[in-house]
Length: 264
Length: 314
Image (tube, rainbow over all chains, first blue to last red; front, side, top):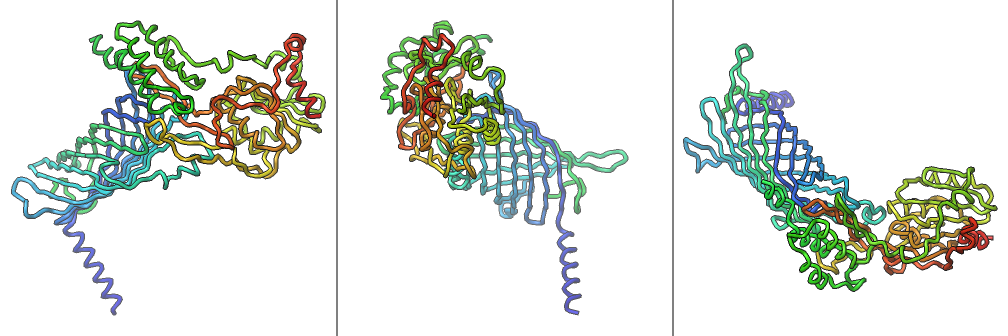
């Protein structure tokens, strides 16, 4: 009897959880351009072009929002002399934002929260000797500020995040010296804990969700996102500095209670 | 528009300053070679103006880099390239590939990946011409097996100008009875001329059993450079090895690559390697037995260094 009550209680709790939450996901593709300087590979600033795939899940509660996304990125870098670098990377983001009730007004809603960011990159400059590869692996805790506004068929949201502390790993000396680098410069000894003195980074994402009505298929939501990111990682006497502008286009897929008319 | 395009590549003064900075912040032998890089700037900078032709500007940059007296330092553009070569041009060649190919290897030699081998009068002869050739322990083992019964082994690395330093460990590990510390390395940790890590040992792990544990001779000349120079340094750690020939050319600093605004590529030594006694090997390694090729015998198709090594091993 006690067991049945527990099961019923769980079912009820799940139902009540589901009734006031919204869940949706969006998958899309992103194109970016900007510039980057990886001092380990070259002292010259390169133009940078990227293409990314993004997979994001969002849970909206009455007073908070959870977001998780995963990006895989391919990048091409070149300069005026047609020298080329390549990179492959990924980004993992998990964030939770809470409604700031005392600053709410009819026009905007504001949220503040925290996030975990993971950023991994492998850069390749094939014509270099001994310094042809640069890798970085960053784990960061970030502060996040969100503002949003709902129009009739358009939902606007701006997310600003700034990493405040992290564990950073970057290439230290070189590759191609086996027996030495592997032993003396392990990922642990090459990692550093720190704040803005190691990594200065700001990210801003402006999201526009458009509700589109189809003749036969009902409604769909198209998300257009403009992202700006500045990052300067100073680690082991090497500087990696990037400025990127990115446009992401994705469609929102209904999971729970999402009606293609954002109700945040 | 043309002017704007030109400016993105930097003018001559910008490029000169960048070149000077790259070397200043990263080159590893200023103190060892007692080079005053600031005074070199004051000599060459006044020679540079934005009105120079690119050919004249290239020559000034090349002359400045020559001051480093380093075969790993080079500057290359799409119209010219410079590199320091005094470390071998000022000395006898002590090697003649034609004599090796025609009179010692002839037509019936063993070729195992990048290794050429032959039994010459019951002495094993192995030539490894470049550390750019990636070989495996198996290649070395197979080559030695096919040499049959031998009284000693010659490893000829003359005219080997280096390549992958990983090959040094691969080859040396096959001749070790036990693990060895073949040398040390110090990494550049900052922009200062003396910003280095401590001496970090390079440990070579012995293979389960050496492919050959008899007497070994390593043949050297002035064109043994870079990874080949490091190979000689590592082989010198083994008791059964004798170095015969001329002093090696050196090249003890692992080279790195960078570039200027105008697209010219610059290469320089950044990571100094040391021998087992923590001594620099940048200016070469002295052989145990110094011998030059006999010109008269060379004219008759005889490599007197190989002949000396054969007699030494008997």
